[in-house]
Length: 447
Ligand code: EPZ
Image (cartoon, rainbow, N blue to C red; front, top):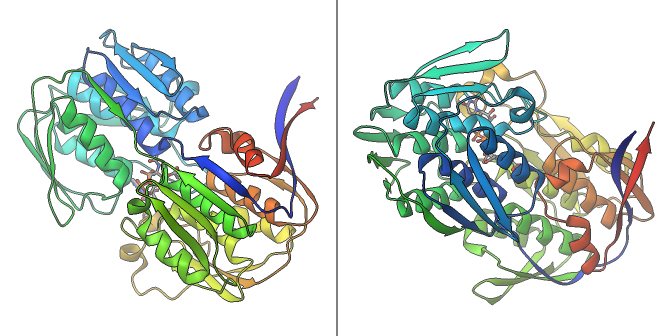
């Protein structure tokens, strides 16, 4: 018998109270991979209790890394068994597992890693990661029969490498490789997402010599060995954006502790322009609320320091309550509107369109050949009163969007597929309930 969890949400209640932001998922997964780079203990604080974190611990266990969790602290110790293959079923549960390619090739000179493959956001290949590692002297082949990448090297050497386009985890994979490579690596057109700076902080604490220069250049001087370290992961800015929108959308007032406003500039300016309110209580505390009647805005998602693609789904739910016609143009992933069909079931007025783009290959962050002909933009007419519905979640951020919409809607909504939310939001229903939301998790027996 399979038990599938679902949320039952009774909407129409304002969120009020105080919550604390969890550690950033998109830092935690990478700093855990850094445990492969040393045989000494890595002590990581503020690690969120998420499905993806549990999956990553599973992947690292197959590679010889033992772990101990005490609350939000994870202690990792690499037994240096030089394991280098991850089982397909374990790795396929977590796209980020392919990033172990960097440390395994740098330190053990061999790696057998499943192709992370596409997901619900699109093809999501790792060609930019592979190109950089080959530039550092790795031989990497892909066997389409078994879906694995086979890599080996005589030890990696430094390289002057330019990314063809922005890649967040591609930049991180090469950092995790170059830190132990022979000689100096220069990464050009390197991503600037701030989660990368947290990884750089940790690697330098371990004895690495990494320096981010200006205009998207990172310089890494390879070192022969890295030692253990203790490190605290930054707050999750995607979670903070989700709670900020939840508060304004339900006409509430939510005080957020461990707030990281500096990392949210592109969001805060747009949020305030649209009618959202953000009051600075102190350096790490922000109160989010609705300042005035919401008005339509236009957003285009871009690599940092632009409006993040992870924010566009919750933002769409917010715009259903804004007066006028709003637009969202998604330029990072080729298929990141899975939630639109679900919001339409609640009464939202959203339609797709394709903006005129002169040179799509250069303009879009995904590889144009992966484009499946889908329109890359949506038009949202608001405000529309949302009503309850039975909803299904396809991906992590779409999941948060449907919860937000259900909180704002009249009536009782049922949301299935919530394991997707558990990947990226810690105990979301418990924390929302503490803010006054009427949301419960129910296990449903599927025959
Ligand atoms: C990271 O994904 C994040 N995931 C994403 O968050 C985030 O949306 C994204 O960066 C943008 O900031 C983690 O950090 C675990 P990319 P990543 O490489 O690194 C294409 C979430 O919800 N591309 O910057 O995979 C790719 O398909 C997740 O927490 C190639 O074609 O993003 C995408 O269309 C979702 N070849 C675009 O580029 C490559 O080799 C940007 O990808 C690499 C990327």
